[in-house]
Image 1: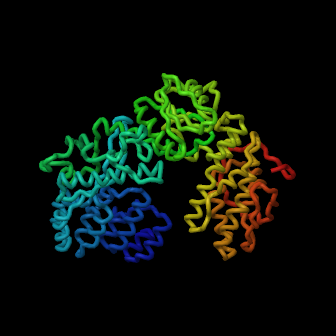
Image 2 (image 1 turned 90 degrees about the vertical axis):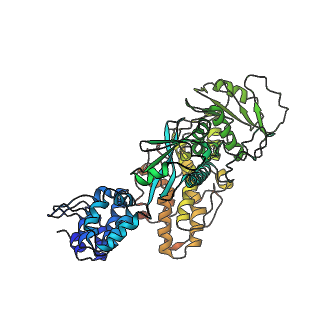
Image 3 (image 1 turned 120 degrees about the vertical axis):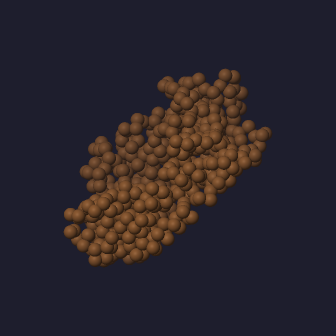
Length: 566
């Protein structure tokens, strides 16, 4: 008998908790075929059983414990049978609390056998399950446009559920789901779920709105649960519905299919969280080419991106420009515009048209299979399935990178490009890591970004800027908030490992030289702030602070050594 089994038999909950923290084998069995759960249900305490259930769910990432709890030992008894034999119903209640699926199983096929041997208290508990039965099911929207399904939440279906309850529950799920989808690409305005407030005179009603994100139970075309299917909610609120099937049968999923118009709108809205991340990084680009895959609604998707772009640039007037007509002549000195070219025949045409816009304008073009070769100005080709926000440099760094590269974005494998991408995410990673430690740390401002050095073939210039950002902004702010030297050192190491060194594209040699200023300072001394971009001295700090930086990305070209200008 293993130490864990012995502790369960002794009902020593503290020892069981200690042994579970050492990650033992949860599938071990005694010679008589008893598992850890068998022992806990038969001779252990309810506390030991609860600890085992928690550990199992954490390790195997599932709440479906029925296969484990219905395994038989050498005598043919399951964990449920052993728990039902106990005088108290605490073990049985613990199993149901940590495995909601048991409520349905105990009420149906398992109940008959358990009632024959259950103790009086356990029998009363089994009888009560029929009155308080609740089944938790996951609700999915099946999107025909993208041939995929997306979970929108969970429902607790009770025996008293009806069509009205299902309709209201779905409405609440739709609201929460669409709000979360909306927050994924903008957190500046509340979501509007109805189109009633849209102004018909506004040629761009998407300003301040999302692209047809409003959903309601009226948008549902059908439900399906298991082998059963229903057409829309019963308007009279009567008749057998999905709620009854979910209660009475072992069905864990309710699939919702939307009507064609809502399905198209919802399917188009799905990639907007990724799209908006790109839109936020478009400074320095004069034209945005939206490459729409087959099956997507180009018009709706283009207008949605335009709405996100308008939210980021509210000061620019919106102009719709036809692709097949002559554009009006823009007067000399005209201010920048936000133009929507719809439809568009190709990337070259979009680039040619964009060149006619006033300086600083943005052009949005939607099309399929667009090519931007030979375009007279920088274009950014955007795909809904492309990488998230961290895959592109920040707006200011992108602008500086484009200026340094003569207007043509470098390839993704370029060393400067990869370094810009790493530095662009530095502010967000630092803020996230500082927030977890509740430290007052501000994001790098415009002055800090303006001091960043971006030069083709010289990624170390940007690394040195990051060094000074660390010395002049991060370390003083942390030292002002943390007085204890030991805590200060531990906090700086945490911030460096969680943010600064994460995905740093440096080799080991470059790291030792260029990341030396990310080491901790002795005695909690803070650096004296100096303007970013000024020479500054490298701090002399312990070498051990660089331990544990972990694996780094691809090696950069050999960096300069001492004496080179930063």
